[in-house]
Image (cartoon, rainbow, N blue to C red):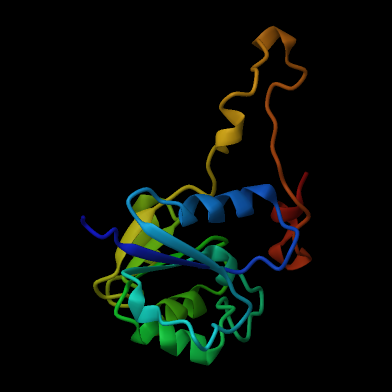
Length: 185
């Protein structure tokens, strides 16, 4: 029998969060064709965790989402970053909110020794933001910020005439420093 490649999904969910985020983590943690393990981490990795037993390590955008302009986007300790970088696994990193801390994000990707970057950046702009000179050999993949939750597949759909809303948009309050356009309603 052939062994399935092993995947470690690292994410950081401190408790209650938007369903789309937890569903995204769950979807990535159960990719078909892999023997998967998901680990919710807060700053550090368990000392007994042997990263070399995994073929692939995915780092979810919840660990790349810090708004701290000084320390940057990565919400992992220096030790955790060094351990991930030293691991023999293929390393993939998901990023979002890419308008923040771009230089620090690139630095974090370098420090993690990222092999694959999953970015929301439009394909024609990926190499402008994440240049080959800054991230040599990193394979870059354009992804969407979310997906359709499978639980919605079987939900009854109203006809267009029965719908009370034609177009909807889900949003949240954002920080003032993102400017007037980000806060426009």
